[in-house]
Length: 330
Length: 251
Image (cartoon, rainbow over all chains, first blue to last red):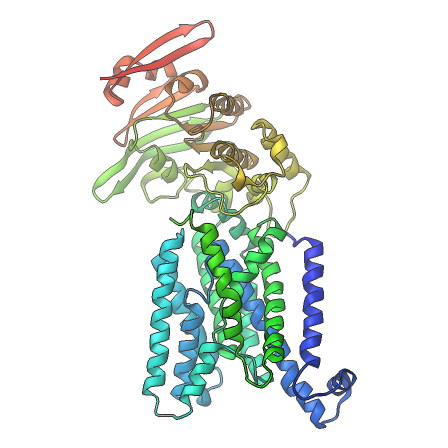
């Protein structure tokens, strides 16, 4: 059950190092010693504000969002027994973003602070249910991808419809933010909005280790080995909706994390779905931290969006995976 | 001791009964061969008996809770599914899951069960091999080993020897017969009537969802029943090496 020790050490060290870098690197031009002093012992001067209100929540959000997306990807792949299943790719993130955009444009988000996460979660939930309904429990690659294309297209169309009909001149930049995904200008408010939902999602998905392991042998074998298949599906749907919904509510639609991370880590955990859950949560956090750092370093003045960078890295991976599995597509 | 009790088990697809009022007790020590043409209802009978399929009538297994059932009966589905490139030992060890309460790691008993299952199927040298890279027949044996590792009193195997080479077909049937001799029970569906005649203690013949014959291989593998159900002629002889049966032609 446990993730192999060297892997967990590598991932945790990478996580710590990148978190540290994420906090000390930024456009404010503060030296490393000053950043730490400001973070730990500061008393309200500008550097302390930058550290505590901008960089720290951003780094924490990168860890939370990355862990959620990596975990959701690993869980969905384990359940559908398909390495191409990824919440961002098959429209779950897009649907969550649609929910977020609707409550933002209608002003509901300003009325009730929980409206935003709940709407994103609702969007994610609806799309996961639709995917499972369309693709069936076996999740054959072909129907899964087709269902994903349809749901992505629908969510994208609805999002641009909201943009189209919005009387608000700021709508365009808002909607673009949700569609591209970013961690810039986030605060601790965002951490507190997302964290409760993510924790619930993490608990739900991490509890699925054993059922997912046994599902390797197929639904019938799993059912005769004591796995409650209906309950497993319910926990999976709720867990993915909570993770992806909360991540999208604070960072917009960020794809490919749940595709790339489990794919890289699978060989290191002996392909065991239960171990892959933990490994992908850590690996997802590492990847989003690294990508968010890269976004700040590559084009510091142009506000490169995190979701765009992830897509640039992730899409070739997706092509590679399709190439590898093309013989098995049913 | 009766390990499985089916009473008027019926499964319908729409109006059409796929399994039609099958009544059947299976006792410890029996190696039951389930034979019949394609579409006779063998797979559906097994799945319904395990509660994987809605049915009317009763099945003693379907009345158990999921965990109790997993400790009573192991099932080897016909479709050989290994979704991820796991090593053989890990895959076979999945059979121990029903015996491990949540959060406990496999112990000495579990490792012994896995070793025993691997050994019985001649897979000792395959432990570290990646299961998905093995040949179809080897994968089939790995999955049989998984079901054996579950160490249940009853084993239901759906066409386990399809696609195995002759030596492995015989070896596998001998493993099943051995389990029966140890006081467990096996229900195995198969199409090789010769192997059924030699290794099963009892045969159940199904045709169009109904149980047509139930008895010793001698009672069931008669030229009349084979002609009626399969539409074939057979040649049968009791040799010094045991019964020999060969399907000869289509009638």
